[in-house]
Image (cartoon, rainbow, N blue to C red):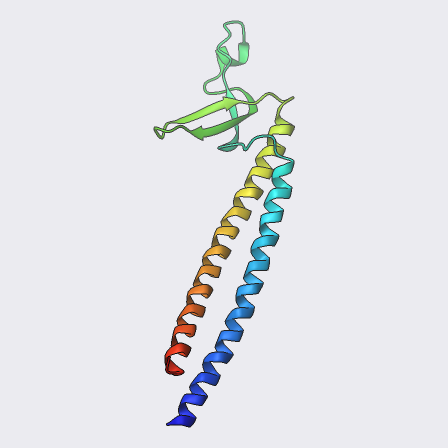
Length: 147
């Protein structure tokens, strides 16, 4: 009976060391990703919400021959930001060609930050799971040692 308990304790201790290494590695990854989020956010004035779309439009100017003679939208494509408001209604806002490069850059940075934040959440959940497994093993070790 005693050799079995020693073997169990040895196995549990080995698993505990493995989990400890995974926990520390996970913690380092979280710090690294957090630093990336901070670095990428530094170049971002404001997070751009929505999606950049290119749309053709009609000017509705009575003197515009293409709009008067053609059916559908004839001018463009022009850049727009499309987003949903709180009520779920989709709004579209025109972006001038002068403002587009900066808004596009901010949009790309926003997308990178979102992906990093999603990864960060997953890593934090993974770390919590490892921590729970460590606590479970410590409890089992405590029982095995007869405390």
